[in-house]
Length: 114
Image (tube, rainbow, N blue to C red):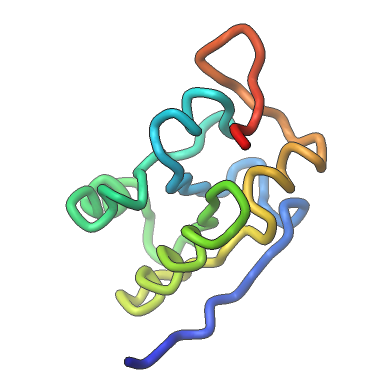
């Protein structure tokens, strides 16, 4: 099986208006997420790829994130194989939270589910 080397960026390199694709599961998303992110859990990803296609304009870069970076690396590799400009966000949402980037959640306090 051919593996594609997927570029990795740190959370500081994710632009505020960038397309952030969050591939965590529903409970992780509900606890805390980046505002404006697109949520497609990794477990549903292939079936829901059209939702991403609707958001991607031309050659827009896709910043893929999960909790620490494992799932997002797999999804970013898949997207790169499909011809998308996809990068993995190093350290995932845990790094996002540590860097003080804003979070929103469904509860009173937004946090990254451990």
